Image 1 (tube, rainbow, N blue to C red):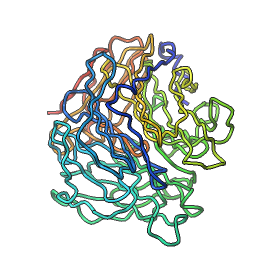
Image 2 (image 1 turned 180 degrees about the vertical axis):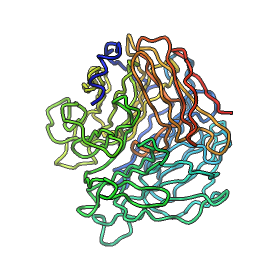
Image 3 (image 1 turned 60 degrees about the vertical axis):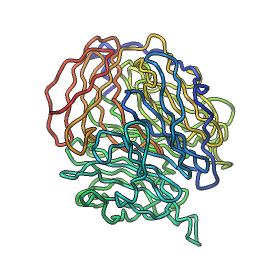
Amino acid sequence: MRRLILPLLFALPAHADPAFIDRSGALPAPHVYEGGWTHFVGGGVAILDCNGDSRPDLFAAGGAAPASLLVNDTAPGSDITFRAGPVQETGVIGAYPLDVDGDGQMDLFVLRDGVNRLLRGDGDCGFTDATARMGLPEDARWTTAFSATWEDGADRPTLAIGNYVDRDDPDGPFGTCDESYLLRPEGDRYGAPIPLAPSFCPLSMLISDWRREGDPLLRVSNDRHYYLSEGYEQMWDLSPLREWGAAEGWDTMRLWGMGIASGDITGDGRPEVVLTSMGDQMIMENTGGGFTAFPFAIGAYAQRPHTGDDGRPSTGWHAEFGDVDNDGRLDLFIAKGNVDQMPGLAMEDPNNLLMQGADGTFVEAAADAGVATVARSRGGGLADLNGDGRLDLVVVNRRAPLEIWQNATPDSGRWLSVKLTQPGPNRNAVGAWIDLRGAAGPQSREVTVGGGHAGGQAGPVHFGLGDADMAELRITWPDGTVGDWQPVAADTAITLRRE
C-alpha cells in the first residue's frame, strides 16, 4: 500500500477518536423498513438537497411500509432536526438521486418491488411521477441495484438497472435470476431495454472511470445465494457494450455480494473498492490494470461481530467511505445485519466504523463512538446534516427504526466541501474527478451515481484537511478537460461553476 510510506512524506495529523450523538428523536416519526422476503434485501436511503437550501434531505425506503421524505430543517451548526415531506410511495427497495433532465432540480430514481418510479423534483421537495413520460419500462420486476452516467453527447443519463430474483419463475427462487439491463436515452425519452446478459442477481452496481482513462465501466456485485454456482462478479464496458473476461484481465470472483464502496485510500489517484458480503468484506487495491485483495492485516475485512459473543460470520450491506474525523484519510462505515433468520450467520451483528490510521490500516471504533447498534441494518449514508463540517451518519434498519447520528468528534480536523456544476444536461458533473493536495497528502474523489446498497447521495464532496488552513484542488471535468490547480481555504463550502 502506498499509504504506508506517506508518514515519511507528509505531516499527517493524529487520529481523533470519533464520537456520535443519537438524534433519531429529531425525526417527525419513527421510520421502519418492513416487509416479507422481497424486502429481506434493500432498505436504502437517498441523500439529496430537494429544495436548494444546501441542507441534505433524506428519502428512506420503507419496503411494505411507506417510504419517508425527511426534509432537513437544521440551523447551521445546531442539533439535527427534520420534518415530514409529502412522498408516500410503497414497495420501495431503495432510491438514488440525480438530475435526470438537467433542469437544476434533483430527481429520484426509485427502486421497487414492482414498477420502478422516476420522480421528477420541483425544487421545493415535491415530486411528480415522470416514469411514463420518460418512456421507462413499467414492468414489475424486483429491482435491487442501480447506477447511472452521462455518455458523450447524450441529453439524458444512461441508466443501469439491476433486477434480482424472478419471483414468477415456478422453479425459483434459487437459480432464477431475472434479467438486468441498460436504458439509453433516445431524445427526451428512453429506448428499449438493452439486456445485461448474463445476469446473476445483482445487489449493487457502480459506474466508475476507475482506471482514469476517460472510459467509465460498470461494476456489478452479485448475490451467490441465488445464482448458486454459475455466476460471478462482473465488469462491463458500456460502449460498445461487452462483458469483461480473462482477456481483459478480469479474474473470476464469487461472493455473496451485497454492496460496493469506492474511494482512493492509497493516495495514488485511483479508487479502491470494498465489496460487502455474507462473510468477509472484501477490500481491494486498484492497481490500474485490475484489483488485488489487500492483506488481511489491513483490518477492514470485518468478517465477524466486533462486540458480543456471537462468533458466526457477519453480513455486510451498505458500505461507504468518508473522512469522519477530518484527518485527511478516508474511514469506512459498513451496515451489518442478518438477512432474517439465517442460522449460519451472526444474529447480533453490530455496524462497523473503521478508522484509517496514518499507516493505511483500519481500527474498529463503532462501539466507542456509540454507533455499534445491532438492529438488522441495511442502507446508510455519511453526510454533513447540520453544516458544521463533520460527517453525520444515517442508518436504515429492517424491522427497527431509522437512526440519525450527529458527529460530535472532538478535536476533529479542518474540512472542505466542494460542489460542482456545469452547463448542459449533466449539470452536476457526474464523472468528474476532484484532486486535492495539501499538508495531509493527496486526495482524489470521483462524482458518481450508484454503489452502496440500494441508495446513494448527490451533494457536495467532503474532504478532511487535518490541521491545514489551505489546500489546492484541480477538477477533471466529465469530458476530460483538466482545470488549473487553485488554492482553497479550509472550513469552507465552495461551488465551482464551469462556464
